[in-house]
Amino acid sequence: MNRQTFVIAICLFSLWWGSASAFGGELVQRVFSARDGLGNSAIHDMVTDDYGFVWLATEQGLYRVSNNVVRRVDKYETNSRLDEEFFLLVTKLNHQHLLAVTERNTYLYDIHENAFHRFGSQQLFPEFDSGSLTATAAFPNGDLLLLSAEGKLWRLSRDAAHLQLLFTLPASNDGSWNRLQLLKDGRLLLGSNRHLQLYDQQGQLIQGQLWNSSSGSYYSLYQDSRQRVWISGRDGLYRLNLDTLRTSVVPQLPFLCRMVSEDSSGNLWVVIRGGLLKYYPQEQRVVSYKEQLKQRAGIDSPNIALIDKHGLLWVAGTGNPLAILAEKPDFLLDSISNAPPYQLDTDTVWSVATDQQYLWLGSNGALFRVNLVSKVTDRFVPEGLDPSDSIYRIDAINPEQWLLSTTNGLFVFDKNSAQGHRLLMPDSSDGAIEHRSIYNVLHEGKEWWFASNNGLYHWVEGGSVVQVPLPGVATTQNRLIVFGLYRDKQQRLWVGGNKFLGYFDASGHFQQVHGRDNDVLTTTMVNQILQIDDDHFWLGTRSQGMLEFNSKTAEIHSLTQAWQVDCDGVYFVTDTKDFRVVGCPKKSFGSINRLANC
Image (cartoon, rainbow, N blue to C red; front, top):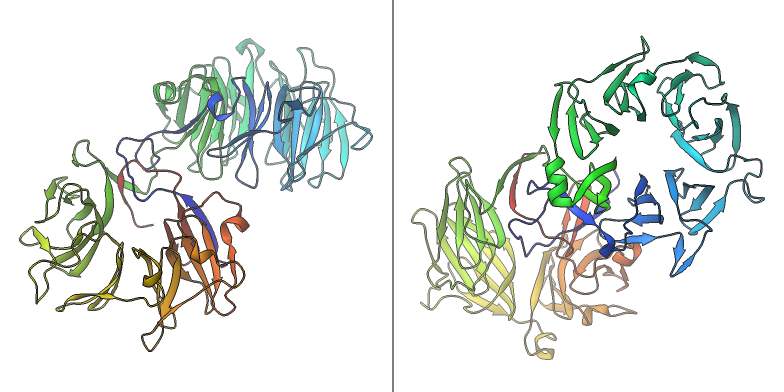
């Protein structure tokens, strides 16, 4: 399997209790409004593309939305690129193209070129005479089925090279044709607001009168992964039995239903008038999120919902235009915060460790021990640790003792006596590297390496902590900050820090390295080091993002620029079996969470 890289926006150094977080149990994760560049006009349609963006068809333009950036694409600065701005539909066609529909026209939008091409023009399908579309559906091969108000059915090839008129429906007695569902067996459900019929792809009527007009209007059709067909109606949610072609109302949902969307577990999210519900078909159970959506997102009445490939629910409606929702994931076993039952008395957690009995948390001025069974939390203050000192790391010296790396040197905590003190040296009672901030630790058997705000230190258990000189580096800086520590495949110890990178060779001599053409290493903090192969290293920096360094040629190039991600500062890089995970300072999580093995 090819290695892939995830760039995750996460702040390791500030875990603020009570903030909105998917792992913290909050449903609403993000709310977009006019302050983010999204207009207050109604959103009529939403779709995701292959790049992870969400596209919005609104009454005031076509928008592209990421998790933190909103951009209007039908307008350049103050100039409109089209003669109209009222968008009704947006659909993904392929990796490069979207289908965007306004009140009067249908456009092929090229994502790469940022260009609109109108259907029916001399340049694109001049035979197309339907103007605006009312509905679309995707064939299994990616082609699109297009329905116009006058009842014309077109097939658009996935490569946008061919458009074929399939057939024309008879004139509708109650308005335009605007309901379309392509069933898994290839048949077509077609209708208007008050009538519904079943056709084949040749335009032959199979069954008429599938909807009882006395039930009023219906708003949408949906077929789920189990091939059940759902009809969102004015007075409830209905299910259409494809064997008997009869509809039956879902008794648990006697509300005006606007639309239905299915999550990865096979459950349905139902947009109703004034609220949002989750329906469990197998259990015939309903959970309401009306109040959470209103209070947390400011959406009084949702009208459309979309579930993206990550399982996030995008909801649009009146009030704030758009919100991202996420339920507590199934693998999350527990959340530990300052609320009952744990009542953790801190607002910041810097480090986490576990043993067979407890979860240990390093905070400001204290070490916390959490019993995950009894829910009891104990607070310990090692002797000499001030309230303003922070515990950055918790490492095991042996099963009975923790080594605490702090902003005020090193401390030892004895689990049996529940007491801590400074790491004492054989020839001194004053403690080791007092008043030094320990940023990183490399533990190799009885040997320890410490990266600090005052250089590199080495400790062999039972002996003293000694400072290790870095020739050629320490003499150029008033205060040598060391952050990155890494042992590579050739057993070289790499050391990175403020404006330098180097390694100790087999003979123990320190060799500083430099970039060949662009020596960016002399201008930034190197805080993360990861070997990719014998010659290539990934370097996480404080201000230049993720770099790739070739130790043989000394070439350096920017990975964050190549990935086109906003990640100037790298907080961590982790190598797993299938992925490399990069952490960037763009979001803080709301609590410390316990996860199941997965």
